[in-house]
Length: 382
Picture (tube, helix red, strand yellow):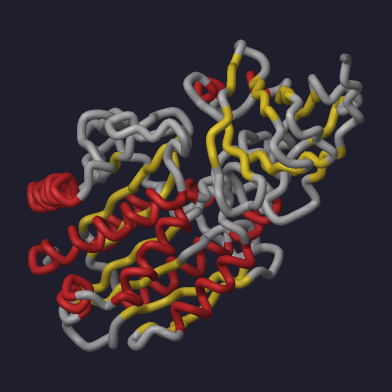
């Protein structure tokens, strides 16, 4: 018996939604395209809901412009994520032919969500900020505003006492990198647990946290830029209230409170590993900073298998750093340990999980290991 499938309804009119419907008349081969960031040519992030699926039948989807995306090499070895309830996300086998990314699903329910990575919703962000403020010793220290007027909270865990180390962790400068705010949620979870390691760290240091640096881009379904089309992680030498108020706010707060260590949390489209990039190309880079970077990496490896030091970016030559990046700009301005922490959109190939790939849960767990690492080396930061 031949089953006639009804046309699907494709929707992305929600938080972090991004897709353009080209042809959904054939449910066995839906043709879609990823929409570029506002005022920018960047695109890679997608997130959409498909309704009207026929349970038991296979539905196929093709993102026909994937081969022209910002990181087209990233599609090799990549598998899309899907969820029937927006809570439990799983990988869907995907293929890239050099032009289109295609994936198929044998439907179990009548609607499903697909995304580039497990999304971190704005509603969950708001709940996270409220929950954090209920933790003893955590305060909403300040808040900035994005281009479109969305709130950018700065949280501090600790009492701000004179002489304590000031450790900054910021996330999601690139809005499509949702694993970064999952990481921050993992930090908040550990602060709420207030275990012995956290108590030890907070006795010597205050944590300054910006969970989402780019709320406009995240809400609009961008990959790389804010509403003005500005890559925030290329704006740390020319931040302005008009084009990059998000960075302008962070820099003003750092200047007010100081920085003894800085971690900028990101996701990498192409590299299927967790790794860090550092400041070896900065003018004024010293053996002291090199030792701190090595200490951080070595210590983190002892706390989690979800980190490694073999794969990553090519090291900068001395004096050749791009100082518009947050990691390099902050490291140079404050002569401190300053790192970019990268998590994959794919999987961590050193410890793969075929069902979920890299995920929100693993991002949260990594945050706990980073806290343990900072606690172990806090006395050495200055």
